Image (cartoon, rainbow, N blue to C red; front, side, top):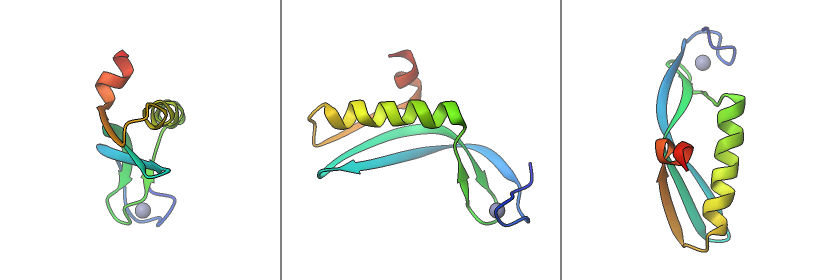
Length: 78
Ligand SMILES: [Zn+2]
């Protein structure tokens, strides 16, 4: 699919780590399925992925750990 951001590159499905920070705590989710433009680097998250990622970050950040890291595949199974 053509990138509507730069109207030049192609959107390609890749796996990327996503990071969230809140109150000095850090949560990282590895291998999140996203699409990235090979020209401008713009990143897209599918609606359901974004929603699940949001819930995951909330859970990780609320766990009380200073930093936490989880794999997307593990998160889906949980
Ligand atoms: Zn682009």
